[in-house]
Length: 112
Length: 114
Image 1: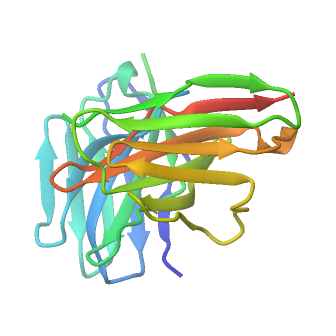
Image 2: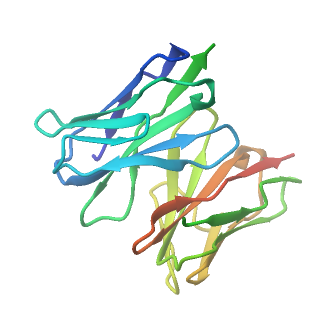
């Protein structure tokens, strides 16, 4: 069964700190790994995505680290801000498929 | 960037009535649209996938007669919750896929059945 395991379930970080969310997968056919940010009462929005041919991708304060051999990938939010408080979902997609498989989500709270 | 408009953003209906939710891709053609259901503090649960002009493909356990999906054009898909009951109360989210645009999500619809 296609699954993406995400941890932690919730995370509290001080303003200016680094938030780290981890995901692991089993299906080696996955070849696209996006991260989504969701605010309460809103739909998810694409934050950043990576393909397995690179080990890291950075966009502003957001970085994805990808470890193909371990089948793990993580999201790092540098200099975390209160406005980053949201739920974050990792996801995965196979090359031949069209259905995103979502992780269970991480509720991030950035405190002042 | 790609924009998906979902309406209404919230709706309250009486038990036994039907509710229609619209999902429109505003600036791209969506070859595939997806409908999700999300319970509080949980992940997105895929309900069905629809391609323009074709019947929707429902995920296991989703009642196709209760959740009617129509994808009449490359920019519009609708989800109709028929004979709604309180247990159908949830947050419904659509997503549209377009070549070159990836997956874009709507802003969601909060359905409350009373």
